[in-house]
Image 1 (cartoon, rainbow, N blue to C red):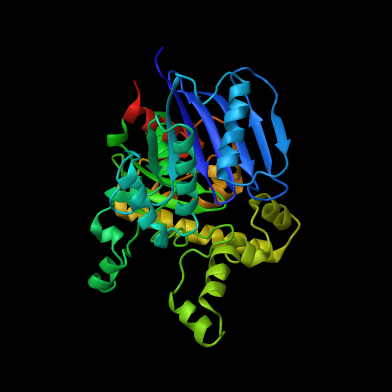
Image 2: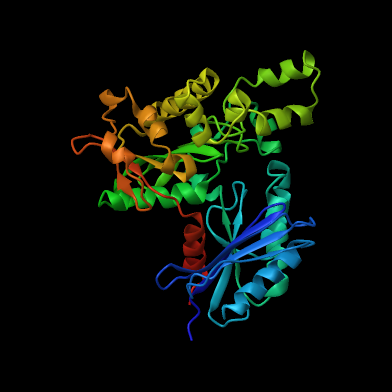
Length: 401
């Protein structure tokens, strides 16, 4: 029996998201989430898609990631999809930061683990949790290939002119300060899916990808390769996000330290968790912001306008970087569902060949679709992202039998 299944694990600090896929047809056999790991109120929700069964939940304390993955294994086994199945080809792990070294999916060994650990200082919130998930999965199936798929890998094709900050080179190199970018699996998937939507090969298409969720990033993709992206050393740089500030004068930090007497940790919390939309209007849910706008809320309107202003600046900047743009693709929670965001983002850019058809933009759907008029010079598309499928695809391409 050939091994065609891939288990995808996305391990957070207190959660594990998972999907089991059959790579013969990219179908999902099971999906689930373990959340609040380490608390008394831990919860596991498991949905067996292969059998068409109903979702199952278990609540109660799940002490750590090892206990979480053992619980996941039990749920899968109950559906005949256990981790001991000979049909399981590999486990693919989302790893947020791969630095400059990891430019492609990588089979995990002790040297890879050591490098992921070495990168913890530039990804202190994410890489430790990713490592915990990997080590736990290795303990459960030490004989099975484990593959790391890095959020940063897709962006390693950026030229040095885009990746370097204009600071002292020796200092930058010593502390690995450069622009790495994130959401890479999403940008890779969406740029290829956009090319397919246009009926072209990825190497023949230039795409601006706008990944708009609670975290948000833009990328300029030329011929299938990233040449610029909005996030930098960390996911804080770039667009206005749900709780992150995005671009701002770095001297604001010095001002807050000197004048506001704020500590480094307080400023970190401010910029990452209390800024962006939630800092501007108290809400980071675009649906709620739009509801408030419809009721005449000026604070919500200003937050929306600031969000769109930054987004429009990046569209224009990446248009200039690429020189020729074939498509602008919206993806992720806001990008896929918030028609007013898409409409506002390209409004006034008709001279650049960008426009949105109101009727097409109002249509909801789960398939990639064009929302630009037929005569538009640049296609505007909504392309649902699928990071788990991308991780599974890259994993299976590396180790599939």
